Image 1 (tube, helix red, strand yellow):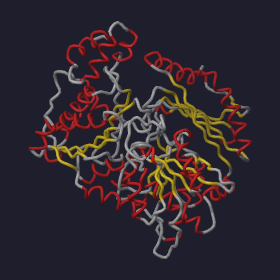
Image 2 (cartoon, one colour):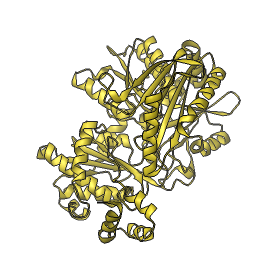
Image 3 (cartoon, helix red, strand yellow):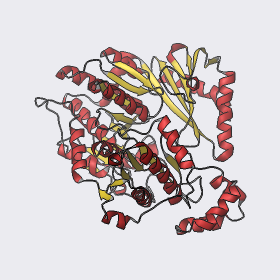
Image 4 (cartoon, rainbow, N blue to C red):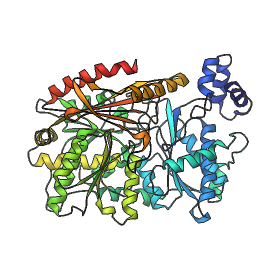
Length: 563
């Protein structure tokens, strides 16, 4: 079936949603728009679905959500005994998240699967926790994470509370591809499903236990004194973090918390931060304005589904310094290791688990403390899988900390995905611990660089939209594999690691890592959730200025591949 045939099928049958009907009518006669909306099914992988909201098979709408849910339902029915056929659903504040959560619940209920549904928006880590706690076969999080407002998504979690594996994703995709969204989807009205007990609310006790688990990650003893009156400005960026983060901090004794008013309440329009991503300076700007006015010590912001956290620290001049995901990860790693040793709680055979694009400096810190580093492919699901591996071997306690450069952290094993609630709590504890001892996080970071050498890690993204963009990205990756890089910024080439051929026990992945002299690396990979290629540069140098000079020279030479 070609694009025009698909389009006509939707015109004839996609009549439930007035917005979709109007958009389909507006497409009439615009072949380019029809092609972009219907040239493929929205890609389903280990991260589930993610895409632009709108009409078409290549968009997020109630029909693509229903089709995916029917495919997942078929998978659960065929792979799990009846007593295990349960799915928990959560959602963030994005447009249509409530609609998509309801559609998914109605499909699962009609297929004989019990549904646990959060009554209100709830973070991704709470979804992971509930999936494990309620012993479900799967979990669904309706979110597009940190993407712009015009996106939404559908994350799928396995029974361990971890995003599905590559193998499971392929099996579920095969089920989804067999589903006709207008002929094969079974749905029961939500009210009727609730009346029969097929759809029930997630108990408040599950949320309470999640908060307790986060508090359990504290590294303080009863004898440790910290100044909990540190002035904190916090923003959930109009997402899910407000209640769990403020509750967790308040119950831990942090009461001097100011929430950015324009970004406090759920709002999928993200009016004050069009890109609700704490990695981006623009998303942090309003919060820093409030922090400056109030003279706050610390500013924290979560992304809409609250699995990432960004931080700004006030320096000696009163200006606020944004810490990168790598820098905060290194600070947390050092704090966790130091406190574990001080309190006698360092586990046997401890592990730091990080992704291959996360700073190599973390491994140097881990080695200093006698901690093994496990490097995995990009995506926190692989860190979650490593926790599962340790659990299967009875060695869960060996997991010390996991993080990725994209502002995702996890210190415990109570969930199997990055947790912005846990990270916000630990950052505040760490900040207060050092402040009480006359140190700032910037002081600690400077000390780490002094001990281990300076590392500059940067990320550059190149966007390629539409069907032509996918082909262009494939051409770029092929060219890099064929031509290679003999040197870069005067640094001789040392080694190419091509993860597509399989490296050790890692799954095959379309990722290239070029290593050069003086511990400089370039890693290239197409994004799994957005139409872009990501370029990660890591530069080791004597200081920030030298590293910045080398990084700029490297980028100037690399740019030729992305024009």
